[in-house]
Image (cartoon, rainbow, N blue to C red; front, top):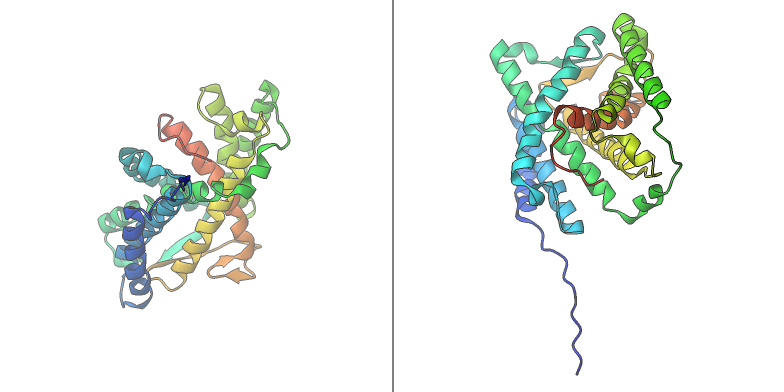
Length: 282
């Protein structure tokens, strides 16, 4: 009698169980406890999300950010905080969002708690992008239009991004949407000139999968950011001239479009600031 070996799918990883427990505990507490609960529950709630998604990626592909390198997984949190503080500094000029309840903290408490919360941004987006990439339908974007990264194209992208950034600072009331695309246009040519990972090296081969995976990953994270924020305290609200209608939670519907280029900016910033960081599988 011939025996055939049946490949077994990997068991649900340990970090996935831990993540499920964190989400199950922190989600209801974040919405029901009185007082300034979100200041202390934001990080464990999003750590739970990140670990659940990491577990799903490992379950589907056999590997994940955590499985490949515990060290790089942790350092991604460390790199995330200063990167989001860049957007906070820009927001001092544009004033597109504010944190209700933040006045209840001392300056030191505010910056420490914000830095801890901001550390989850990049891991959440990159983990979710790897999950999106694990689905077969994403393969259809692997043979798209090829874009040759010529010196003229690189210079044009850089100058366009620089102009957008200057317009944002000069006329924030009208040009604030450029925040979410100008940095990637500035940094992509710079990363290419420095020999660092960049989208243009994928597009040269017609591979649009990294851009699609990142964009959808950020949209998924955006949904959870806005949903969990809605009944939180402290919480953020938006001031977006010309787009304050059709809200989905606190975010205007048009605002969700900003998550698409935001993911690309995170990837470009990560490659610029941490070129030897973890190799992401998009």
